[in-house]
Length: 349
Image (cartoon, rainbow, N blue to C red):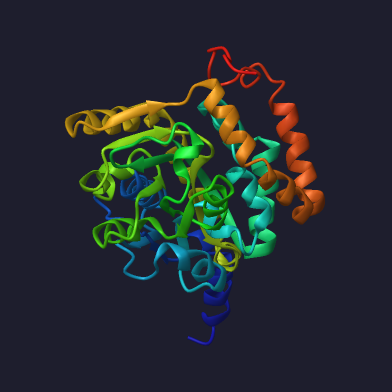
């Protein structure tokens, strides 16, 4: 035995080193929506599936849906602190810790799909600058941008194509900056997370809500509203983020799997965007919901009443805001995005 010991030690030294990527990792993911939701739950379920498949279950993701862990307004703090590893939320929820992200909520900057799609593409200077701000100021790494069309007003018995019709209306708004937009144009805003809209309508505390078209079905808002006004003043975006300390603790192999899975699912989401819009339109039609578009003149009126928001944003956000606006200006000269959302002509000057 004494003679063999050096040979045994040598054999052990010559064995290949264990791959750090082979270590088992379980990540905890927060989801405010039911996992059965085809848009929000479906994308996170696909991400889980892809990560576990590509890592041979070396990385697993446990999803806690229906806000079991954290409501939407708590998500940024939870990811920042490491209370949860992965979560999905909107730019509105970053406005306190990373206010430069608020460029996405400035009225009528990103008011058509080609423009927000270009801004959200992985190589975009706008995306890189926003991702950098979230990383440095929140401590969360953005894995994907999920764009979902634009915000609209959901109301009953009236549209708000003319902003004067918003005056003194009680409007649920999904965050601080959307609430400011309502206030600039004469409404009385309540900043609420979207899962609270239903009960606020039920309690007769609201006249209208600002939300995505899909909220009619996803949150049961069709029970309280019968009109959708497509102001399209700012995009609906969901960021999937991972706590940066968690990310740095992963092996390079695990990081590669997660990044690749996120990129793959992000492409799938964009591919199926038109299907989501078609489902929302079919549902609205089945409930006899009136769909109202704005004329160019009405867009101009909405722009006029909310014009002060962008000036405030630029004053408060310094060099990063200037970088973003420079990138935005360049994007508007690109063939993808140089035209506006409508070819209709103005009739009032």
